[in-house]
Amino acid sequence: MAETQTAVPPGYMRNASGHLVPIAQVREQDLLRDQVARELAASASAIHDQLRAFKIKALADIADLVRIAGERYDVTMGGTKGNVSILSYDGRYKVVRAVSELISFTEELEAAKALITACIDRWSQGANANIRALVDRAFRTDTKGQIKTAAVLELLRLEIDDDEWRRAMEAIKDSIQSTGTATYVRVYERVGSSDQYRAISLDLAAV
Image (cartoon, rainbow, N blue to C red; front, side, top):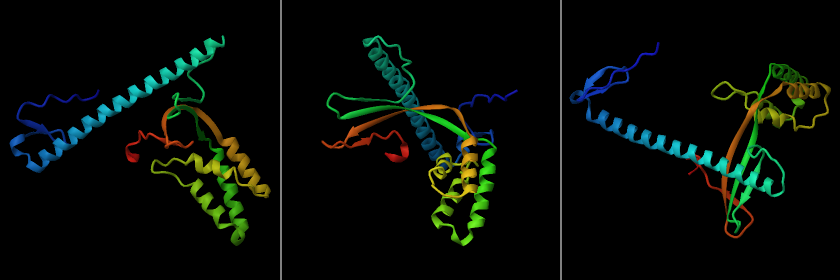
């Protein structure tokens, strides 16, 4: 059963260990740090809620637009799936609904890795350094221990005339399994009067 924390009585603060500490005994720097952390966390939480509300509204509006277009031509459409681009009348803004398939790899990827390693060993010094780098990157895991999907799929684009390599690529294809879809909303603004568009970033690191 989850333990519920009691309310913090006036004149006290709860520390990271869960203990109540009189505010008078808390250092000024600790109080200032706590204030900054709480204010920023509250702002971040509000922004998160706004982004979630924006995504819900954007997807609903786009689905309605698709539905209305279908009704105009007496066609029934799902309205919530598939990639859609909509532009403002003057072409200044573009909103894109993109649906991406989420994939993962089965244990057959290990067979592909073994075959590729055998190829590299057999080619020895004759192996192209760029291919070695691609292979190393493909099977390097991220901080969560997950294989980077895009790096593995990049290997499938290599044209190498080798039976063992081709078997490895077949093993990669067989290892791919769909785990669902993810829907994104991206908003772009035209760059001046050109035909190029710049994303209006909703990524904190990119603003």
